[in-house]
Image 1 (cartoon, rainbow, N blue to C red):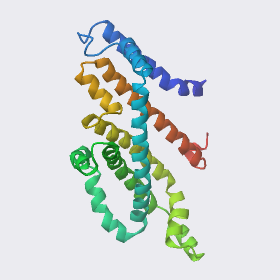
Image 2 (cartoon, one colour):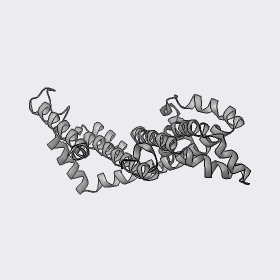
Image 3 (tube, one colour):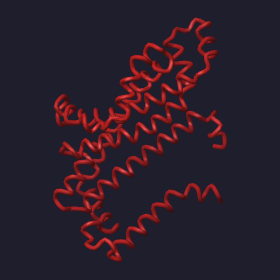
Image 4 (tube, helix red, strand yellow):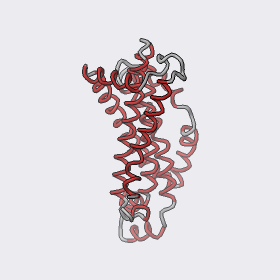
Length: 256
């Protein structure tokens, strides 16, 4: 019974939010419903956008950009993090870059990215990459630095090269930290792509949100926000599922 309630928790929370939203609009607590259309109006607008294909098209475009940004950040962050965690030279070279880039507002770089990469998909992927790569790098570096030396010494004594030790010994040991950083990086990729589409784009969910705002179609605005929220929720759920499967041996996953 407890497990059933736990699994139904997200649906119950969503139902409570929608119910509160309906009450706020129905009672007119925000005045003009133009400011916040009711859930029925937003759902109807979502149905219209789905019927004409524009919502599905924008969803596919944003999803493709997010996956590209996240995939590139995962590869680059893993390699850089392993190097920082296991090599003093790499740590000295990369730590200033990560230390400066992690807290910096990435949107400030977007005009330069647009100049370098153009108005199309590449600049949005680059901004998503910039948002995602630093938390992944930091998490992998921290996890890799905590791998017991006896494991690497044992592998090296059996003739394994340093690169082989990094990917066959250190990386599996650092996997919990990597996946924790990947979860943060995934959200960063979604935010970066969506913001990039809001600033300069002719497609994607971010563009749909700005188009709704400019056309005074607030229902479309909320459809875009809801769509990117659902996209993030689904991708995060898939990442958590992958984490449970990859870390079946971990104590927190022992109960299934």
